[in-house]
Image (tube, rainbow, N blue to C red):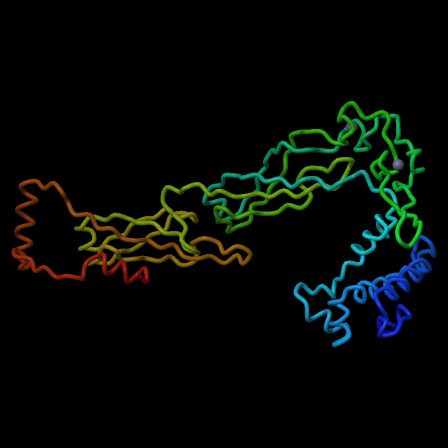
Amino acid sequence: MSNFYETLGVSRTATPEEIKRAYRKLARETHPDVAGEASAERFKEVSRAYEVLSDPEKRQLYDMGGEQALNGGRSGGAGANFGFSDIFETFFGGTTRSSGPVPRGRRGQDAIVTIDITLEEAVFGAKRDITVNTAVTCPACQGSCCRPGTSPETCSACQGRGSVQRVANSFLGQIMTTSPCGVCRGHGTIIQDPCPECSGDGRVRSRRTINIDIPAGVESGNRMRMPGYGEVGPGNGPAGDLHVEFKVADHPIFSRQGDDLVCSVSVPATAAALGTTITLETLDGPREITLKAGTQPGDVHSIRGLGATRIHRGTRGDVKVFVDVTVPKKLSDREKELMRELAELRGEEHPEIKPGTGIFSRLKEKMGL
Ligand SMILES: [Zn+2]
Ligand SMILES: [Zn+2]
């Protein structure tokens, strides 16, 4: 690969004026609008060399460490992605790309909807039909934007090319540059008779029903992207995406904690002392839980695999049942008598007060606090 001095055909001691003169001559010979597309690469090289050698700071870096110094030595990597188009536009006031007509269709906007779901739907997944107010392809013109029976006319200003050439004066002399056609806005065609149904937009607002597949395991705030279910773009452009956000309603029994579904049950002190069996209505149907004699407030019972679904994995956490023990508040005379008798029997008439062994310390232990 030749160095920048060789590219411009100048010596290492060339003055800024000599460099500028050399570039002017070479640019004129290699500019794609003058010499054709085939010389575009050469023109780029020449411009790259000039961009560096015409800047005293860059030239010094280059002289000391070659192109590597330009790439690494400067903040922002100015050497690596140097502004070829910038320098070009500065000199010629146009772009090198002759892009041809710009398609009329543009991508449609994304849309977002929030749907309320039950905990059961969140855990097991579900199908749901939702209706959204969105932009759909105009049924009258099928997105062509023209009154049915008519079609776009070729733009006479640019002969359908979408771009116009103009002569610009630069220090290189007169140069042809290409810019988008202002009459047809670069489309190359003009719609003389727009579709009355959509006012020439190619789309209309409409209500549309979409079938949503709620994945098992979603949580409140999770979003699902449905590509192509957003608004159709103008001029029959591709549709944007639909984002569906889920909001899980409160459940009367369970709440989600990580992968688990947690709830609490209240059992009377007598049942906790004697042991009992309770039936819990889980999301998977009724399940029996046996509380052993001497169950304490804050005890936790787990039912493996009946918790929340881990999204994308399909496995499930556990149901966790926190036991709450209720102490009777109002006692009849007979009940008081029995209680006193029990207390006497257990030597609890003068209970001992012990710190740090109650429900709070046990709860703290279980929650890992
Ligand atoms: Zn229409
Ligand atoms: Zn035009």
